[in-house]
Image (cartoon, rainbow, N blue to C red; front, side, top):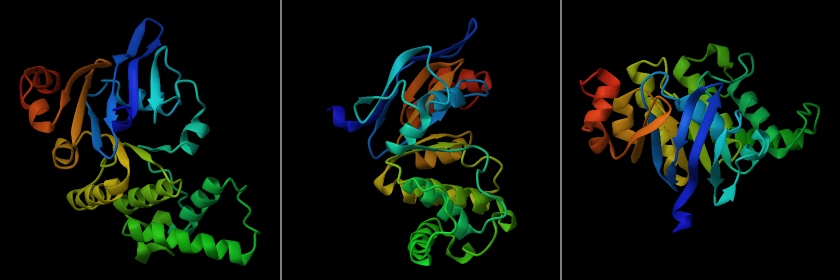
Length: 251
């Protein structure tokens, strides 16, 4: 059924001059799943994300979200439709507190023009929602802490809270574990599993232990093209995937 797939691409391609960064990628992301996009450096993963969120326009191909053609829809309209991306580099305001960062995102979601002078009643209502979102990502104790004072892992959790403020139906996470130690990786993995309980997640991730543990399905890209797709056990035992990653070693 059409409704089983929240996001589909057909023949998605992006060409720069004579070079294909992404070529003929056809994805089908099942609603309610955690789906990983993996591959060696330069495989086209981030370009693919940029195409899905319209920071790049495809050279050819089609993108459907909830059955609607969004191939040429603007980035802001993509986000408003419920497809929201969390960036690879933490995108929070360093000198605002956790609560203030989430409140800015809530104002954006409401379409407000960052009116910091608005009534205490309106701000209090935003504060309640901001504190609820901070609680969802395990940051209740950091509502009054500025982002610059938070550990790297907690900054990433705050970034996910600001993303959740936009009420996404589908969340795109670009290397959520990049630069993290074991403790932060475990915390963010648990957070992703929690936020995926009632939404779809597509993630680019290099940490294959995380992918194996979290993801329902995996698509492998190499040189901009789809190499393999399936559950982790299938993909990791695929000789072509091993060759792409390690020249014959384990994927």
